[in-house]
Length: 367
Ligand code: AGP
Image (tube, rainbow, N blue to C red; front, side, top):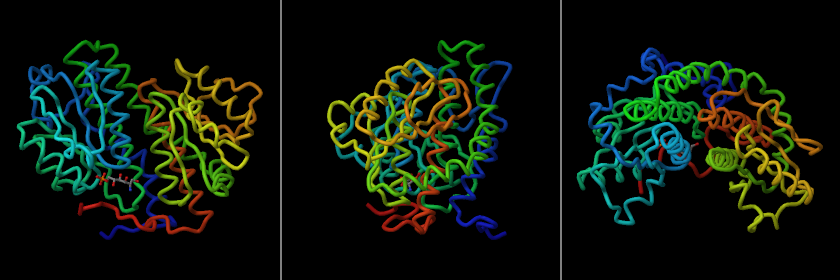
C-alpha cells in the first residue's frame, strides 16, 4: 500500500498524531511487569555482560543527539551509570578513547546518517561495543551494530522528526530499565517506571488533543524574528529539541539555553520583541526556574511556559501549557510534544512547506 498523508495537510501532522500508537508499538512485548524490567533480546548481552558496563556514550546527530541527552539522564537516574551524549558528527574527529567497559549507543531514525554510521565504524574498528536505537530495519547503522532496539515508529517522511524521536526516548527508558535492574534499581522502582511507560501513549494523546490552544499560541510566536527556548537539567535537551524543530520549519531564529545561564549573558537580548518558551516541570528546580521567569518578565519578554498543573506561577503574565504528570524521569518526552505542535503551527501560519523545509534533507548521507 502506498503511504500518503491522507486527511492531513502534511506528513508531519500525520506523524505527530501517530505518536500514541507508535509509542505503544515500541513497548509491546518488551515490558516485564512481574520483575519490573524490560525484555530487550536484540541487545545480545547477558546479565553479566550488562553488569560490567561502567559508562554509556550516546551518539547521534541533530534531534537524535538531543534525545540522546534525554536518554543519558534516564540511564544516570535509573541505572546510576555515568552516561553522556555527543554529536556523532564530532566524535571521530577528536580521536576518541574507546573503552571496553563502555556501552556505545548509536541513535538514528534513518540508520543512514553518514556521521552516525562513521562513528559506529570508528568504535568497532577500535574494538568497542555498539548498540543501535534505530527505526529503519536493516539500515546501515542497524547492520553495523552489535545489537540494538528497533524503534517500530513506522515510516517517517517529514524532515522534522516527531514519532521516531518519541520512540527513541521510550527506547532509552527501556534500556535504562534493563541496565538499572541488573544493578540497584529495585523491583518496585522498575514497576513504577513500567506503569509510567504504560501511561505515556494516553498522555501524549491528551496533549495532542489540545492542538487548537497550541495553534493560537504558535501564531503569536511565529511573528517573532528571534526567540529563546530555555530549560534546566532534564528540561534542557527538551529546550534544545524545541528550538531545533522551531527553526527547522518556521525559519525563525530559535536559540536554546540553560535557564540558569541566562543571567550570564543572553538576558541582554530579552525584550518585548523576543519571546521565551520556558520548560518548567514540577520538580526540584521549579522555584529556581520561576525566579528566572521573573527576570525575563522584568525585561518585558513575552513568555510561554510548558509546565504541570498545580505549578504556581503567581502573578506572572504568561501563556501556559500544562502537560500531564508522569514519573519525573519520563517528563522530558511529555514536555517535548507541545513544542512540536508549536513549531508545526508556526510554520503553517507562515505558509512554509512543512514536510520539506528549505536546505534540509530527511537523512544526511554524505559528509
Ligand atoms: C530532526 O527533526 C532533524 N531533521 C534532524 O536533526 C535529524 O534528527 C538528524 O539529521 C538525524 O537523523 P537520523 O535520526 O535519521 O540519524
